[in-house]
Amino acid sequence: MGAGKSTVGRSLAQILDFEFVDSDTEIEQRCGADIHWIFEIEGESGFRDREARAIEDISSRSAIVMATGGGAILRDENRRVLSERGFVVYLEATLREQVRRTSKDQKRPLLSGQDKRRVLTDLMAVREPLYKEIADLTLPTTKRNARQLAEQIVSALGGPVSDSRS
Image 1: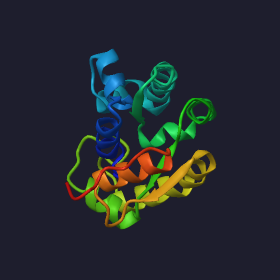
Image 2: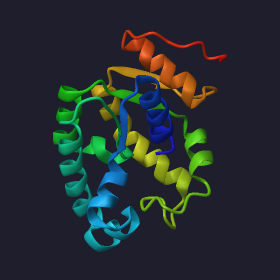
Image 3: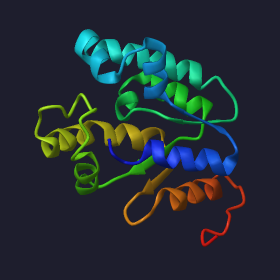
Image 4: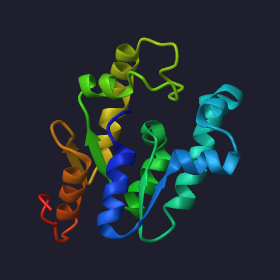
């Protein structure tokens, strides 16, 4: 959470000339409701069911860059689909970065009304081993902007990297 998945994903899609798809945005469009409302009405389990269906559908498309929600990794089926169908990048953000990046964000249901540092610490303890389990590439996000990270991903994919000074 707060690692920059959507921001880096958009930049990567632009470089590759691919479509960018954010699974959370896709879920909101399908439901006609925001993630916070879905969590309130259906709980995390209901949201995760919707998320799994969205990831299954999105990952079957070609020429896309997909950013998933941070908790998508929790389900075995999502890890399997992502691993089998794509190149998985784990954007590794420090706890300090995550707290800073989510400090004013009111749209994250898991952080709503909670001690953000504690929640993020607990989430990372569960999620990080799962991210590392399926990641084809792990990129620390400290002191790098979205464009630099996207260019590193392109390089890892074996593609040309543009001059970042331009």
